[in-house]
Picture: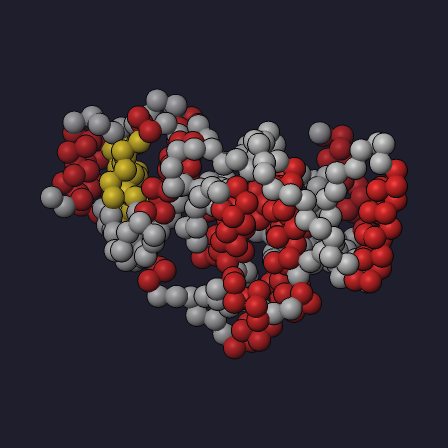
Length: 270
Length: 79
């Protein structure tokens, strides 16, 4: 059964009040909510390699109407984001019906049908000065010494125009008070924002939360390799806390209140 | 738990190229000598590493300074 029929059935049976998917507008696919009142709209429903954090739309809808039943077209990354949002009580699994479609290469699925099928291209200048989007964090550590790493990251961060695009697109950014918008912490009207603190604050908040969908990197107009950064943050979380965000329904242990620990303090190597 | 969080920050700073500038140690109020030793060692280590590369870089291009100050003030009043 094709996806249009499936959605039609879900709406007609009353399993969902609204179905979040995409429609074409002037040659672009944009997020769109399909409802029973506009069934004829369904012929515009399209699934392609374009992605948007539909689960973020679902979170906003749920904020307004907590009992709204929402259907959602989901790839593997959407599913991971949904798991995380369930964990943090932003959505409840009873109200969400995901319809799975093909996705980018991931640990759980082999199908590929998304923007990450073709790796992002890195220009020669960026390769020399900055950080290659497709580099492996381990190789980055091996190939660059302390000073090189520092100057490369400072080059990347200094491009930031503080558009908050990474935060706005992020499916798992749901705090009502964002510390990056607090005028006491981040000075309003100054560019670039205080680096590297601005980006490290976000990186810390992403640790144990980022589900590696890569939308932040896609959205960034300054081409900062955010996915690369957050991926390494989660590597640390996985090593230290033994936790992978979005894989299951347990909360991240990287919180204020902790658990028992067996690690020893590091010796000071002078 | 503290140690896990600090390990996270240490690893993060290492990735950023700021390795070795954060140290965690448990010292009780009865361990004055340990305290003195740890602080001396760490001071020595930091002196050896030299000034932080971030120092002096954090001031960014801002709008007119007085305008900024006024804005901040308004925010304080509002908040």
